[in-house]
Image (cartoon, each protein chain N blue to C red):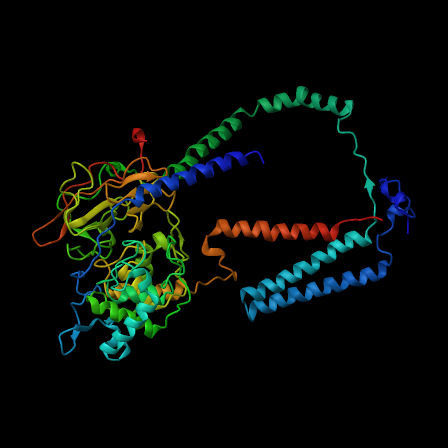
Length: 303
Length: 312
């Protein structure tokens, strides 16, 4: 193959370029965290509409009929103090080796600053990372944590979130979405504008830069979709004041509905890559195999 | 059964006698093969019948595919087997006849042209002209759809968008964006108010609004007032080929174009750091009015989107 050396050279140049880009962006200053801040918009995940407080004035629930946000204790219907005690024990066992015993990202042994500070991030952040199976991380040094089967149960994840939140209250609280009045068509339009750039229009996910990628959205638990949109895990930006809770609910309905269950009439989606992939498979496998089969059946071996 | 060396050499199909080994079928028992092929054809026929039945009764892709696929396969195998086992085994040669015309034919042709045809052909000038005219007009009108497919004339949009001094920044639903709406590391695709009513509203006007801080940010010298309270706004059109640059990696602080992986740094004026984009993304100068709404100071200072003419 004559073009092979040229291809190899081009790949080497591309790799080098990516590496250079990584070095130049790694030093870029990162956005400062949103500790203690929430959007002022009343219907966008902030604790300023439909607020319910407990006897001591703590916000335990807020939101609308589209999405309600609750503290872990309120969600589970248990006492906050008990849950936080359980959460502390679980945290020390599963999380403290990296995030530190004060959850401030400073481990007893290891590099301070290498791990995120969790104080004041809000229960939804902690709940998302644990319930999506990304935390505890299988390998804390990878560029991006992978979605996996969660090793910590729903109730235990909420307990850890409750304890971290008891150090300094943050928002959003843990969301619960109600899809009963959702508009899938509005969700599709909002998905195309806000989500499809990275996750692709089929929701299958795609590569980004520097070894990161936008994960597939197929068959993600609905409340985790809300958590991701509102908190922006990893390299994903957060979507705050430009999406109301009702709009987020519409997106969730679209992502958990048509996106997760595409109508592949041919039986196989082929990644939803469109006519190029389909034509290629059709020609290479369909026609190719049939041609080989034809030759084999019709071959004349006199003798 | 003829032995190998008798059938290796091709014989002429026109001269081979009927008892020549080349003329015998490959099958040792043609009658039995015939039965097998007949069974294949009958099965194929049944499959086609089932296809018709499935079409009316259970028209699922897999039922249609399975029935017509099996039918075509069985018929095909039967046909190939027929050719292979029942036809004369060959191989044959068939001599090609001479390609050149005989002298007589050539003389007759030139006679026809010189003695009679030249006059006949010469008399059709008017028809020839009409034909040429018709084809000429066809050539001209055939260019119409070609030109039309280029779309409307860009007119001023090459240089200007609908962003004006004081344009309110609105999100996809037309809601004005307030300074307290977005948290740090949020992104929104925004437009100038009234974008739904303009031809270019959803094309050249689209802007990515990112909040990277809570305090004012200066992305570059000369842009001291452009990023109030940490809001920066860049044209969403890639300067390479105009794809929407919507991939914001908030930890890396880069915007990535999905088409050719051009990367732009968010912190210092969307400078291009990787990929084919020739220029940074144009930045939209913002300000926050007395009521706290985000507005644009002016249009972009430079044309948005891919290069054109001498902009390259």
